[in-house]
Length: 205
Image (cartoon, rainbow, N blue to C red; front, side, top):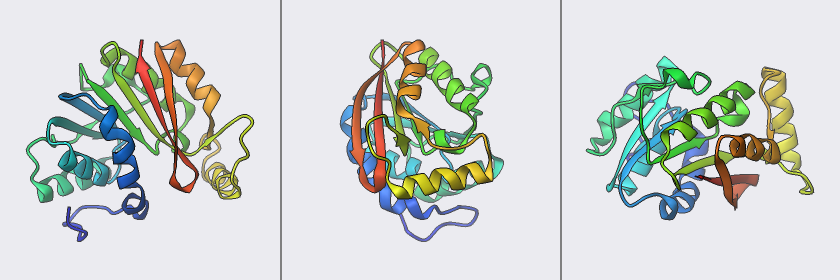
């Protein structure tokens, strides 16, 4: 993917830093074929990067924000990847309205802490409904963990999020795992990532 954004595309500075570690964690855990549903795809840079590296998979980016959908479409047109599907509007907090009826894997990068808890609840509801037995739900982002000291940078980030919106903020890993388990999704792996982030791998029971 070119580092020069096409017209209409947005750029997230963090994506250039984390896209390779995310792909390294994600690629060996994805199915050999099928549809990957990316929820809250944002600017669309991860969708292009992952679709380019995983040509055997269909990649479906989604987002609730109209400006994000424009950005994803711009990156998609620029990349011209046959396995990267046109972006769809999807609100994680409203799983009954999701425009997708099946997915072989669900990917969600940096959404849970920058959205109300209802978005996480909707994510688990929808993922559990769409995924087959053994299907992957992959989450990436910063979390609070019991018995693990939180990095000062994450504490400051958590406070800055709450200052912007009291419904936002870093979530406790055990709360996310418990919510997922109630929907038939079991936390199978916790992978430490750069910059005090985690990759969480859930499997549908």
